[in-house]
Length: 610
Image (cartoon, rainbow, N blue to C red; front, side, top):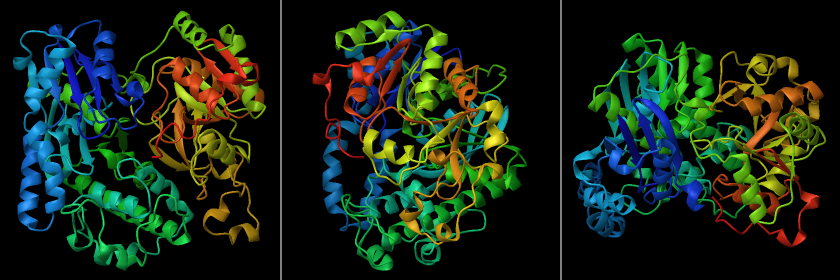
């Protein structure tokens, strides 16, 4: 049985294909269109998935959309009626779009699919899942667990903002829900907006900013914005928010509460912004922990799966892991709306078609390497077409040369194998560097990524060595758990360094791997496994043999505002427009100094800042 899943028309459109319960391919549309968080119909991603499955639309048994648009329209209408006449401006903007497109979603989908492949019988094949059920299915069915609690948290689906499901084998049922406007995701996005970052894009920046501050305003949030019950359920005080009735997230009462207007994106960050970031992060962790504790008590289950945009908060995930509320935790690597396409396909297979799950040794995500790949002849052809100069090496020479370049302090673009599905680069479309360098964090942020200097970088580590370098004793293959640096790797700070606050703490060398050690001595860890990414694993082994260190800086292969590179041409353009000094694409090695200087391009203004 072949099932195609689609998410579209909100943000992070994607497609995924499942054959007989096995995940064959999945990709986000942004990687093809080069428009970050592209919300359009995923034409390119869909075509890729069909090609990867070696099939056409006519041969697909079901096409599944990841939510139910009519229920979303019902929420929009009821929200306006409940607040009228307030909110008319927001209602006036959204209503024509809904009337023109969203209410005719079935017709729109059929017309668009018909343009891709005019197959007969598409109407009978089209199914609609519910938003939170798609998220829950994306987390439970690929997980290594035969039974688990599934906690889904995001901004809002149709009505649900937080849901708890119970999964057993091929069965999955939502047992609890919280509804709009009471949303942990929207609360976090309100603070994202208030601190000057882009909603549905900059939440991870807010998370990265939090360790520079102290949670001085957490009590203000508890007293005024959110009422959290002992079981983690909560209600938001809508007096302080504008997302129900306006075109912004917060209102004047919110701004008065914290004593500042919203920060403009180009304004400097102050210590107060950092303290506010720390405060909302603390509140988020409190809600997550209480929800998890209540679910553990109520179900008696040992396993927890997480999905929805809030599940990308790897700091909160790491703290939940260390509390040992559940014995095991698994997070869907494409936890946001892109993963809804995969969840919709899996829900159709197991819940609609009643097909059983197959036994697994581990999870079913295949390392999340589910996107397009390019063989060596095609990489060479594409690089030649863009006038790139390269040398082809065998595997051994390639790994040794790359490891040496990294040890010499070079930033390396690494383009290998199948592209990752989800927001994280996991060693297929990555920029790599030496984590032992005290200057590489600033260099990568300012000269390669062209982004804010406070942003932390993540370590990729050989799975066998993770406990020797981090206070973590489980696998973290998807970079979704933050853990402390192992105490023996931490360096003693001076009394003067301890007195520093905020951004002044950035340049303090805190461990043997300062480039991936955040100011609170934490790191967002990726464990690398030979089974899922043998070439990246071999590179880490080569680097360890050369330096004694089994860790590399791993950040996404893109610049600020750009989607992660998808093709060899994308990789070459990014290489030529940034401070990346070496590009390794397949078995091709490209050195910056050997390229035609006329191909150098100022990359900073090519994409809108995120």
